[in-house]
Image (cartoon, rainbow, N blue to C red; front, top):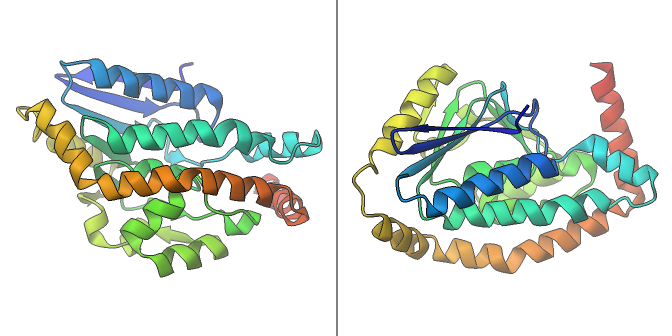
Length: 256
């Protein structure tokens, strides 16, 4: 089974994550990065849609892998391996020469929130939620969330929800964060295709230059802060509180 199902629809590349909860694994991330790079050089494409085949967009970090590394004596091993790859994908999305449309067909958690916010357009189903899970695991924000969430939702909102590990419905987020909030996945995909087709006759060179000009301050801040995020979450993983919170979280997941 492929971690990403890639299809082309008349100049639109549709990337559907296909790994169940779509937690951050090397396979999923490397395949996503590969397709984003292919889209950069494919002159027949004019837009990219990123979504999921399951009812969950992405659960973010893989808690099982985190626990395996912790038990092996390397509590920060997972984030050392995975977060740099996630960071590359976030930068790829925010600097991509083509418009990226994220279809949030279900809830999204942790660092995967950055994939949604790094996209140029966002469409969501009304049942979707943003799970700001970092504080519930005694972790600091990573994968660009400490830049993108304050940028789009405000510093006070980001600080409170990160620390407290809150989950927020998309219907309670600012309406201008999304191009559309739909009742069904089918409606959301149709809306995403409509948005993509707006760019069908756009000058690709102009798209690239304009995107980098409009998002320059965001791009520059991400470049400055991604390393600080990584260093912070590595330090957080090495504290006793992380082991306690991770164990509690995994036990709760088993009991459901």
